[in-house]
Image (cartoon, rainbow, N blue to C red; front, side):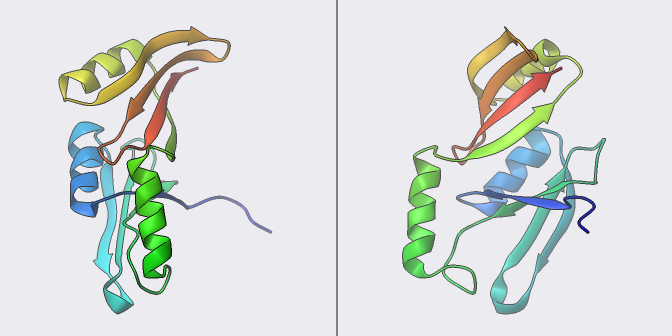
Length: 135
């Protein structure tokens, strides 16, 4: 029986740049950062308050997981902004939004009242959108 989800993947254009964004702009902690067989870099981050679900910052490259063609297709979709990084929760959406804007994080929607709470929509430095939600 499956009891939890430990990791979820966000495809990024450059792992070093994504690490800088998630660590220094969003304030995430580094979980793992190691090279595994074939030169694949296993890089994870998580919010300081919750290490139970870690985000894998994966750069699509030709190798064990992808052919060159499939890696190129995924990179193209990332560049188009076709992927989302998910929903990040906060206790105060307006305050967190203002802090992130001051750090240079781009938003496509400021904090807005929704049926489920207050939500802002941001974009990471690879073009992945994310939702910032205060329930």
